[in-house]
Amino acid sequence: MRKEGEVTEVGTIISETKALDNKFFPVIERVIQTPDGETREPQLLWDRSGKTFAVAIARTLEGKFVFIREPKYGQMRKMLVLPTGAVKKNETPKQAADREFTEETGYKVENWVQLRENPVVDFADKTDGGEHYFFLGVDAVKVGEPEKFREVVLRWNPDEIIAEMEIAISIAGFMMAIKYGSVLKKS
Image: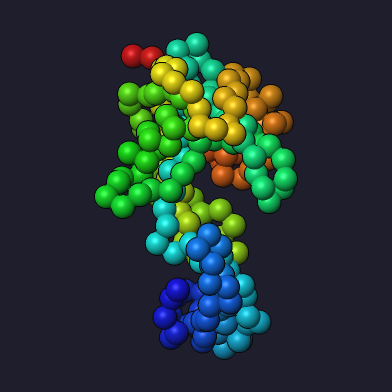
């Protein structure tokens, strides 16, 4: 949570209270006053402050992108996504990308390149915090099996990939990987 009275370029926090104190989905209610003096209606926000995530995008030796299909319980179906996970204490976002990628796919990448210096925030108007850092790896090699409930999906055709993906963070990561495709060229 932020402090009452905090001032930013979009306004001043008039009040902030916990609306739901849940370990996985803490919600705050925030009221702000805009710089022109308007007091906005209370907003409910998912409090992800202090939480950072790593998104891993990688290609195999054959040039196929490695995705996972996993259950998304909010949607009650399996969806095609990029391996993503929280950065743990005493871990860098790059280390988290490497760990999450191997855990979730059973593949290993030796070298990761950060795609953007600044993080991306998903649902910026509905969350506080929750920054995502994106990493790109090449020459992913299978070293094990993915975690339970996950299915590895290998794809090379960008049109097919975009047609299957439905999660904003995954789409953003894949589009960055395409944009910075020169990084993918073998040395």
